[in-house]
Every structure is written in structure tokens, then in C-alpha cells.
Length: 141
Length: 129
Image 1: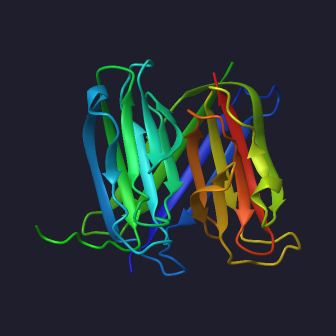
Image 2: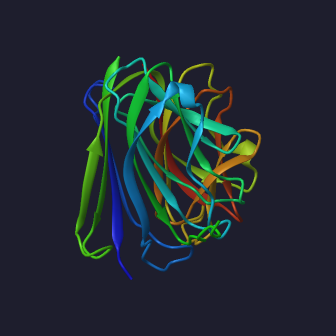
Image 3: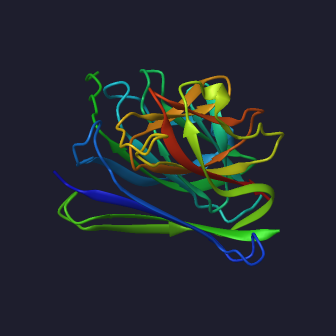
């Protein structure tokens, strides 16, 4: 099984006077349980338009309540633009220009798609990666 | 106002025939309030473990890590729910895992809930300036 490692570093020299912030964490990406090897990886880039409304970045096509990870980065350099990030009907937050997120996605049920929406106007380039424990291919049409 | 620099790195030598070596960073403007880094022993009642106050139009950047131990220091393998207040599950962390994401666009806070027993979590939040 493949081993993928995620590392985060969060630093600030001026948030607290005389006490720099330095948060570091690293973890191996496990499948549900302790099996290494989240090998179902989807990475890509796209462009969102405000006019298109909310779009599903990834459907919950896998076993419910499993370990999956989502990375999204808003590549827009326009500070007026942000992406609305949600899971089905739940808005999680706003991803501002050049911001990124790394979040678990346990696909609680089949209505747990990751959705993204561009605000306020124009188009937003984004990049993403999704690591899955399982993926059920949709039926042919 | 202060500057916060979050960096994510993903690496693997064998996830595919091509080596994975990916890094992304950002420079965020931060204002008060913020919690630099704290620990809490999370119980099975999410409403008792609110780590980020309800948003009022602002965005919070939230960091959470499952430390892999309980309040007595013993290793645990139970999962840690990341929830919006009102028990809306966003995702679950296993021992050793972490997350970083913006929270906002609604009037909810963030709470943690252990799937059983207690779990010591590290967390921080920063308010977007």
C-alpha cells in the first residue's frame, strides 16, 4: 500500500508580541482504520463562474462513513472573490483568494457531496485534490 | 492586524509511478479574536466542546488535531467529530490527523465531539482581517 504524508505548518511572527506562532503537524493518510494507502486520488483544476451557482466538486460515491480527504485552493488573486464551500445543504465556509483548505470528508451518506460556488462576480480558477478510501463507479447510462 | 502563513505539503514516493511532492502556502491577514494553540479534553457531548464562537459574518480559520490520547493520557483510536454547532457533522478525524479550513458564511460555531470516552484535541482559530 502506498504511503502519503500530509504536513501543515502555521506560522506568524507578529500575531502575539514576543511569542511567534509555530504550529506544525504531520500525519500519514490512512484508509478507514489504520491501513495505509489512500490510493484513489483525483487531482485537477477548474474554473467556476458566479452564474453557474453551486456545483458538485465530488459526489459521495463510496462507502458511507469512511476516511476521505479534500484539498481545495482558490487560485483567484482578486480579493473580492471567494468560494463558498459546502457539504450538501451545509455551508462550511468561504475560501478567499489564494486560500486553501484541508479537511476530512467522511461521506456520511449519499447526499454528502462536496459543493463549491463562486462569489461575487466573474470566474474563479481553483485546484483540488480528493483522496478516497472507496469509490463506487456510477452505473453506465 | 497580523500575518499568518499556513502551508500544506503532501508527499508520497509510491502513490503512483510519479512521485508526489506538492506544497501550497498563503499569507493571511488576521485580527482579533484568536486562539493561538490550545488543548481540550473532548467529551461525547458536542455542545460542551465549542472551540470557535458563532460567526457573525466574519470568517474564522480553524485548525484541529486529534492527539491520539484521552484525558488520562492513554492511547485511543476513537474518532473525533468536527461539527458545526447544532450537531452538524463536517468530518471526522482519526488519531494523529489534522485539518485546516475556513468557517463562515453562516451564524454557527465549531464544536468537537468524541465518538466515545474522551479525546484530547489541539485546536486554534484565527479571525480573518
